[in-house]
Image 1 (cartoon, helix red, strand yellow):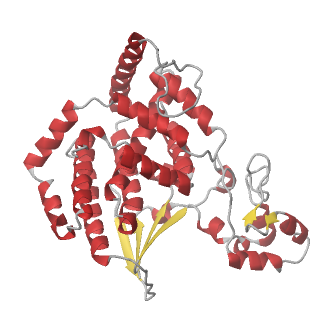
Image 2: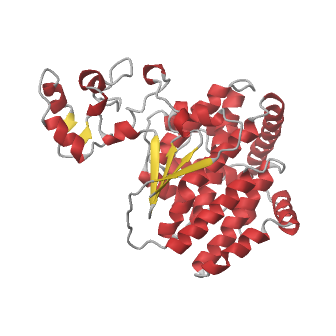
Image 3: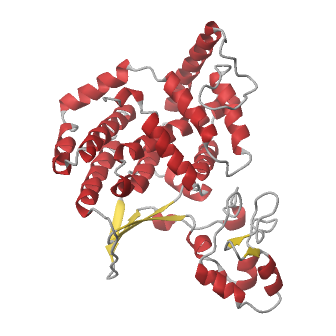
Length: 400
């Protein structure tokens, strides 16, 4: 078995009660069978509380009205840990924020940016992320696994990450090249022409390809697409009750009264279908002006911001891209990475405007981990995001 980890993997250490949030609230914690068997054998003063705090039929820890785990105390510390020690924790609690993607004879381990401390580590890292590997004698087999396709996806991911980390090019160009590679790769997967995938890698490392992508980037208008991607978030299930009000506030700050044509939400500022075209144009001009000013501010006040976006793109692609071996959806997964960073950027621009045109590192950490929690800790949300990426293709690379 080959294990892969990012080079910052061992930098993480839980800061427990000092954390500004908690990983024990907002989602249901599922206990593994081994842990449940162990809990049934517990004796002593903690036994009664343990018995009444677990939904034994569902195999989950109960929650209070605020969706906090019943073992989580007012200091955001775990009473089970205090009473029974670290070995008492179920697999979910022991593993988080570690995330594992499984492939045949490969286990890719990373740290989820849904944890504020992990987000802080990754966003504070200035050097390009490197991936470390080590081996064990353990072997596993998977049904319906295509090792040849997987090897090509690994190659493609390596090429895309190398491009994303090439800081001699502007980030927008790097993203464009990666989207173009993923698009052409997807065409070959659908044609079952995997043997020609290497040609794609060579194609997009030429000067002609770079000029082609630059021309695409220069021609397209992205305002409507960005707003639609933002409003797509209302279609997702909510893990935290405070997330939707946060989105609504950010949307109004960013887009004014342009209205929502993506979902059926009754936004308080949304126009009817007959809303005045001039008002919509005014909102758009205001947005574009704010966006230009925000980018200028970032360049001057946060020179490492582009590196932070790079790290997030690498994070999402390294975590999810090779999962295309199971469903063939390579392009969708790259789009999800790009759109996720785009949405984080939009939320940060709204926060910048709300803060009277200033931003702190903690604002970035807060936005990244909160977005990640809503997307990455819900299988329905991940599935919906992929479905939306099939429907709402990034317009400036839609060659079909």
